[in-house]
Image 1 (cartoon, one colour):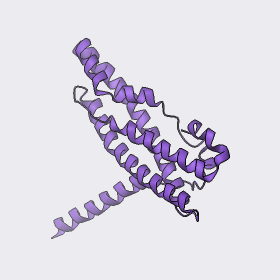
Image 2 (tube, helix red, strand yellow):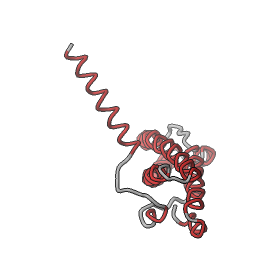
Image 3 (tube, one colour):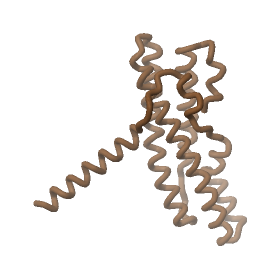
Image 4 (cartoon, one colour):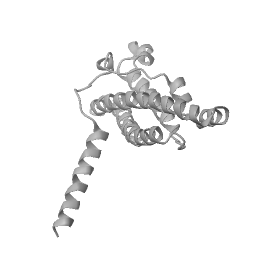
Length: 179
């Protein structure tokens, strides 16, 4: 009986931790202008290259095994840095979407809800991808298929641009510089 209680308590704590990680914390973000200086830049081309399974296969085929493992660990650490930036940005966009969905303008509210949904999806992806990357760092020969996170992040940035155009069309041209 005590063992069951302890296991249930551990499961509840783990679930609460997972939900806190997905939801994130931090200060309020109510407008796109609040993002300036708080987001982390993500070079999507470089990030895609690091997550590309074909690139990994090319390196595996053209490098000696020892050298491949060293290079692959470096690549995975760099990818981990990008994933952390994506997670931070997604957390901020989640907050922005939550504020936007409370708008009285139905288009802004709808765009805010889409941003929330996409940001939550990206946050969950980042948790799983981080785990895969850590496993890949420990075992560099392991194949990691996490290329879809870049597509999800790109979709998220597109939703940010849409929300920015709806909230303030005069600043829409500066949306790309935020992330």
